Length: 433
Image 1: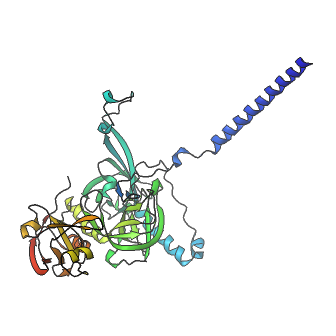
Image 2 (image 1 turned 120 degrees about the vertical axis):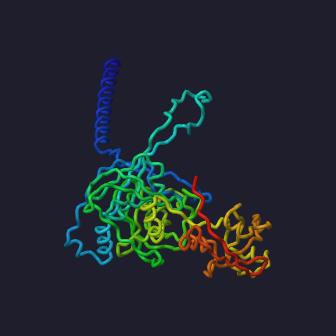
């Protein structure tokens, strides 16, 4: 009896085991059928520069683009568009008109293998040694400037690129050549060889006419998703931020809450008429993704720089040769000036630079305010060529937009509480090494 009971138990266990294995096999097969394709995995660009403890300036090119096949969207039926609201029709019309002007840019960069963490003979493990050089891919956006094949994008998108490929909305894929770069404004111009009838230039607007609260529309290729449209408003104007690829800053940048993400770099920021008002370049984010604080290079700087890049390959800026900051209440009082004194306080002057040659003076005293050591005592610039300078940004903007190397300007300054004027012959900005 015990032997028959034991045999039945063994037989039942084997049957149950076979059923379990069968169900596991069916489940795995279903999982393979329903699994998301590898090509749809999204990647986020790395952070270039940390600001504070949790916020970072993120260059919005994508370091590792996904391999997503080019598709042409189905046109919106006219009857569907006519039934849409005015808001939807406006945005849809802008997209249909401008999307053919937007370009998806793919780059291949050579990276030196010398960055391996330690020499092989010092490694605690048998690490495989990398090659002397290897390659990585990146992606960004751009837009057609004219029918001669010039494409505008960000310098950081194509920086150190060995190969650049431009893809157009109609499916054309062509190699592109860099013909001009300006790290100080983070702009670059590419050249492609396509017939004029296949090139659709953008309409350029006026960034000086942009106002806070107006509509902002971005078209680009975030995370490799070609020809993506996002909308928002112009959140602020007149931001001055470092270019990230140069020691100098870009003035009058446009801030927007239209979503800008890795891959949007170099794409256009548009107004409700479909005119370009800026070139999308960076975001402030603690997560390396859109947090509603994006920035675009103002199109009036683009109009100033790009034609020169096309003709000469580089752009030269006037250079004063100082380091300074905004005047604040505590510094003003410490310098025996009115508490509401405004201007750009000169902290340092570059040796043998234009400012030093003209006799401008930097800070000569250090005080402690709220536990921080700050420099004071330098000249306070309150006007340039009779244009008021209320903050350091005003001086930077004037020098970028209104002056050229070799030009002489008149600075109105406060020194020891007395107003005086100093003439300075501007030099050419030092080249980024």
